[in-house]
Amino acid sequence: MGRMHRLGIAVGLCSTVFIGGSTLSFYEDSQPTTMNPLFARTMVDRRTHELVFDRIFYRSAITSELKSRIVDSYELLEDGSKMKLFLRDDIKWHDGTEFTGDDICFTISAMLNPDTPSPNAKPFREVLTGCEYIKKEKASIVSFSRTFHNPRERLSFAVLPRHKFES
Image (cartoon, rainbow, N blue to C red):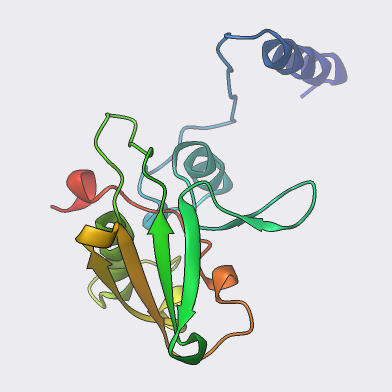
């Protein structure tokens, strides 16, 4: 790709960012191979998923601080081997369906399922043991294989919408 071509793409992307209410165009060299983050195989897949799916916790690119757009608050239980996540009330999926702790538990269950042939789930299988959804509290209790110094770092995976991926 020529230098002028790259410059043209950069200028086009920058101008889109500065115009309020405009559409951001995201260019890649190929199409994503899957829209399921558990089966991402390429960098195009991963970058696309970062634009579509929120993670429970993520690191700020500016401060490196762990943040969440999903979790309102959390508490550690049983000496840190469990974490109770209280979710924000105002989150919806792209189709308008309410985001719930059941989506988090569904995602964890899918990752822990040995029939899910996902290389992306492997590191999480080593640290997560389960999840319990508590509907009346709008919360999820995530169980870990052991106590971790900062368990939020272990919850950096994309959450799947149960109502779309259940089948």
